Amino acid sequence: MPGTHGDRPLPDGGAADVTTALSRLMQRDLVFVMRFIGESQSLMQGHFQSFILAELALNGITEETHPLIHAFVERHAILLRDFVFSGVALSRQFRVEEMERLTGDTMIRVDVWDQLRSHVEMAERQFRTQIPTLPTLLDAWKTPDGGAGP
Image 1: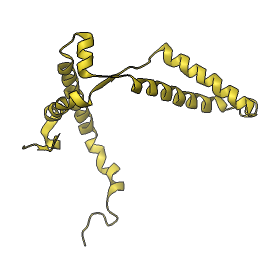
Image 2: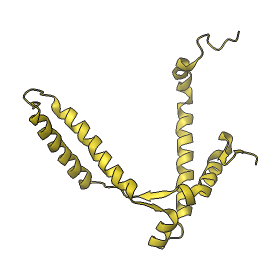
Image 3: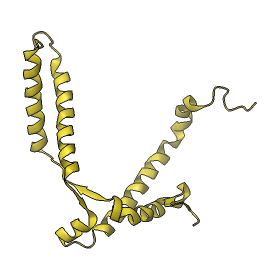
Image 4: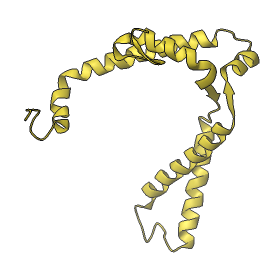
């Protein structure tokens, strides 16, 4: 089929083509997952910060011995928080047909298609704005001989 490579649209196919190709895959590839937000994230992160500080203290590492330890603790608490929430989210996935049945909303696929198309177009516009600065950035990717053939 012109404009595609297998199930994948070619780059010149545009946002509508790639969005249409993705919509064909929704039945198989689109899942809805739960996400903890707001105060729940803060609560979990606080738990891990306290946990990490306590575990480090048991091993002789305290604020007195390591005055900058809070940056380490915060970063690792975020990693542990995200690990827990991602694991829980992955264990509870819903397929698009399940979400349509649960919500009674038969337009979910259309709404997702519209959002996909809009975001693909936005990403393409954003990339185009960066084109003037790319030659300098891409110099690092040139062949050592500068592209001059043998």
